[in-house]
Amino acid sequence: MLIAHISDLHIRPRGELAYGVAETNVLAERAINALLRLRPRPDLVVLTGDATDCGLEEEFAILRSLLARLPMPVYAVPGNHDRRDAMRECFREGGYMAPTGYLNYVVETRPVRIISLDSLVPGASHGALAPETLTFLADALETAPEVPTIVCLHHPPVLCGIAHMDRIRLLEGAEEFATLIGRHPQVERILTGHHHRPIVTRFAGTLCQIAPSVAHQVALDLTADGPSAFVLEPPAFLLHHWTREAGLVTHMAYVDRAPGPFPFVLPEEYPGHS
Ligand SMILES: [Fe+2]
Ligand SMILES: [Fe+2]
Image (cartoon, rainbow, N blue to C red; front, top):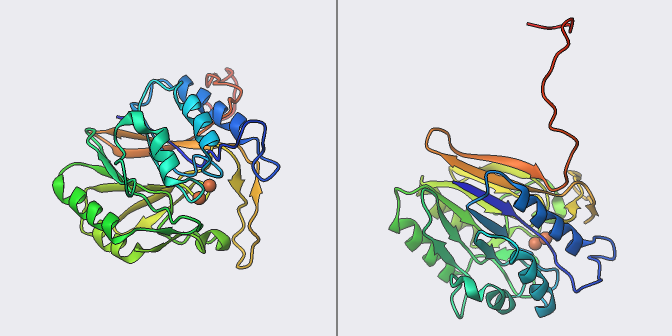
C-alpha cells in the first residue's frame, strides 16, 4: 500500500500570492503533476491541512479543480487556514465528511487504516482536539486494535524547536491525545502538517511525522527568539509505503524534477573498484 502525503498548499484566489511572495497555486499544480508522475501510483492521498490560505470558497474551488486531476481518493483534514464548512463542501462528493460538526472520520482501508481528526480552532492558529473528537478517536482505536493505523491531523502534538511554530502546535487536548495514542500500539504514525518542514520525533510510543509543504517552507531557525519567517526551499511531500516485511516506511520526495537518474557505471580504472 502506498500513501502519498501532501500538506499546506495554501491555495489563494487566482492571480494572488501568499504573503505577496509564494506562488502557491502554481506550486500546488506542480505537486499534483509530481503525484501523477509517481510509479507505482499511490493508492490514496492524505492532505494534512492548510489546503487553502484563507478558507475562501474561491480558494476551495481552485483546490477542487486541481485535485480532480488525481485518479485516487484524497482524504483531507482542516488546518488553521481552512474553514470547516467550506472544506466540507469542497470534499462533499467524497462522502466521508459528516454533514455537520467536526471533520473527524475513519477510512477503512487495508492493510493500513486511516483515522482523520479535526484540530481546527476558528480564528486561531494553534490546534485543539475537542472532547467530542477525543471520544471519536478512542472509539475508532478500540474498533480495530489489530489493524496498523495512521492518525492524521493538522497540528503537531510535539515540540520541534522552531519557537514560533511550537507556540501554535496542538495545545488543547494534547495530553489526552498522548494518553490515548500511548494505549494503542497499532498506531504506526501520527501524520501532521502545519510546520512546513519535514520533522520526525517520538510521540506516545509511536512516531510523529510532520510533512514539508508542497509550497513555501518555514525557515529552519532553532534560536529561542527566531522570527516567524518562510523560505522558498524545494517543495516536497511524503510517501508512506506499507509492506508486510518492512511495515510502514516513509520517504520524502521532492516536487521538482532533478537531473537523472544516472546508472552507477564505473570506469575500468576507477579508484575504489571492488
Ligand atoms: Fe500551513
Ligand atoms: Fe497551519
